[in-house]
Figure: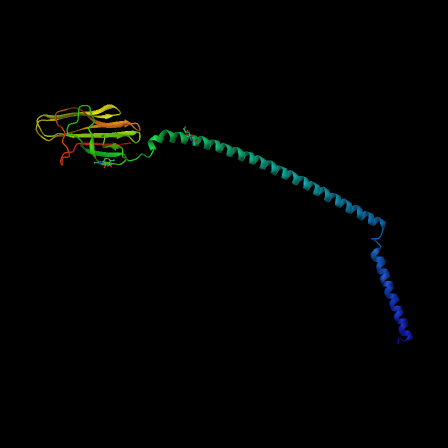
Length: 246
Ligand SMILES: *[C@@H]1O[C@H](CO)[C@@H](O)[C@H](O)[C@H]1NC(C)=O
Ligand SMILES: *[C@@H]1O[C@H](CO)[C@@H](O)[C@H](O)[C@H]1NC(C)=O
């Protein structure tokens, strides 16, 4: 229980605190609470906002311009790129055509050709008749299977330049001879006469010929003595050979 004096003291104390608070509130509020001050602050705030909005608008405008510029320069770059790619294409097409033309021009020369080389020997008769083909019946080798040992005919498997050789060896006897020719594509391309009175004797005829694919070559007897040719001899071979040079 508070005494009377203590109660009085307490009341006085509370009143003092309230007074302090009131004074304090008045002092703190006074400059801010006037209508003029409020309007002034609002106005300032509005002006600041307006400046800020202008700044933002200007920034946006600048940004828009920069974006437009970037888009324009990208479009320009795209056009330049497309043009340069197109001109590269055109240039390449031109180069390709040039190379293709060169390749086409050289195609026949760079074509990989088969190995054409053959050798046949042993005439099927010692006495070939005048104007007939001398048939060499034994095929020693024939890479491209182009020589026919039953007709004595070589058939060119590809177009090209060929070399041909025919060798005739005489049967020894009195005055044997053979006059013969190499015939390519129906025309004489080489000829020779072998003649001897008493010894074994050989000679050759040679020719270089350009042939088309399918053209033929054979050896033909033009004129002979009786039994002029040596047959199946160990030391002397009557032969017919050919090779594709290129
Ligand atoms: C190359 O040239 C030949 C002959 O001119 C032509 O026929 C051919 O079509 C060409 N090839 C290409 C791939 O252009
Ligand atoms: C004749 O030619 C054929 C075909 O090329 C071959 O099979 C045969 O062995 C040849 N004959 C002789 C005797 O060389």
